[in-house]
Picture 1 (cartoon, rainbow, N blue to C red):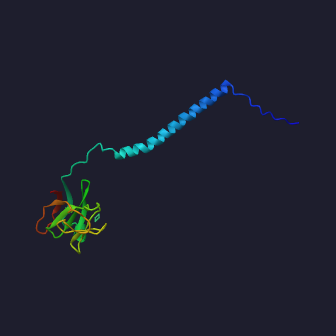
Picture 2 (picture 1 turned 30 degrees about the vertical axis):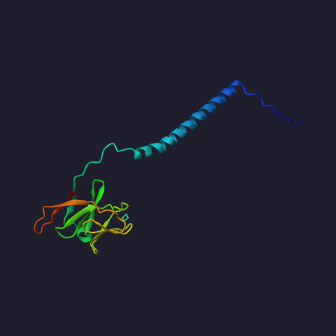
Picture 3 (picture 1 turned 180 degrees about the horizontal axis):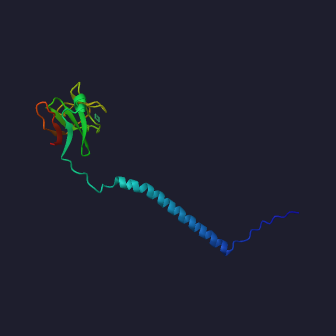
Length: 167
Ligand code: FES
């Protein structure tokens, strides 16, 4: 006849010590895992939110290319970077070149030049600016910030170079 003994022998002190070490190891392992997970999320967020260690170099002037730049001639405008700010350079004639901040004063979309209508247009919400950068239609609340344009080296039959600087 088969007999089953359900009596479990009580833990010895050696077994209790082994279980305690396992528990301690699992507790340490879980703590280290949670800490590593937290650090892997927190570090990139902190780096993103922190101030850059090197300030952005102050830009006083940028070169926007030649006055006969094919992009400028065909589309009538081009976007150049002035530090971190996009600037729209529009060419109305060989000698009439203007520049404004390309950032719409409504919600910061990038404006473009409509050659056929001779205006600056923001297609995010149909904002319109005239050729002086003044807001004339749609939701933009303020004019575009103007930039100074200097044309250097232009002569009869010779294209000059366009430079843009702050006013
Ligand atoms: S962002 Fe330009 S009109 Fe709204």
